[in-house]
Image 1 (cartoon, helix red, strand yellow):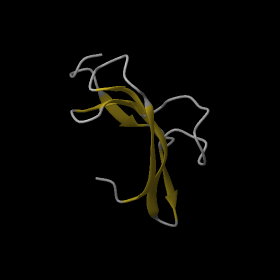
Image 2: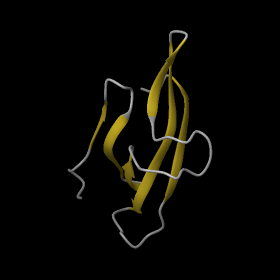
Image 3: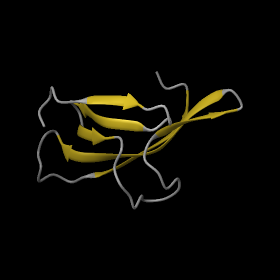
Image 4: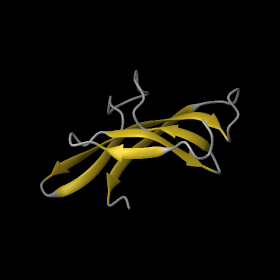
Length: 83
């Protein structure tokens, strides 16, 4: 991957798919397979509950600033009103 090979989309099922780039952290994958560090046990998705859209789940940091040998990790998303 390079800095131009990214796209995140949201399917009809609410699941996020794809990759994103952050100049500060590096590559994120929004549809990684588990096991996940803790609850919820899923990758990132949008839930429509009582008319409010909640984003929940885990994204995976694949590499820090394009260094494949760097540490990886998880980012937990949980909340409403993501832009």
